[in-house]
Image (tube, rainbow, N blue to C red; front, side):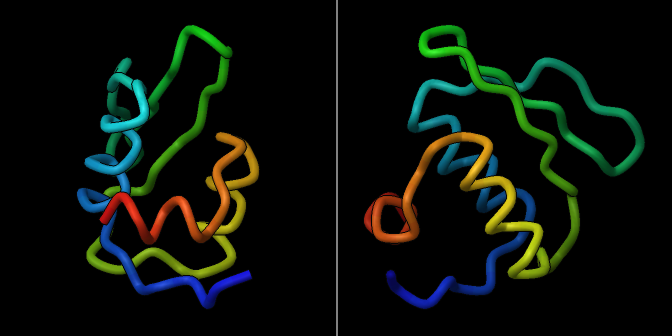
Length: 73
């Protein structure tokens, strides 16, 4: 598994949109994104820098590997 890069919230949103996720709503600094098929939903904090643990949780919820994330940047 590759080392996770440091990404901002908008960077993660762009990557997830390439994978078919749409922004459902935003509550404060949290962006809720959803994909229909296969169903997946995650919350992306709209911060300048997302912690690696939080990014790892987003990847797990959306069933994306670190390598796929790096390729889509």
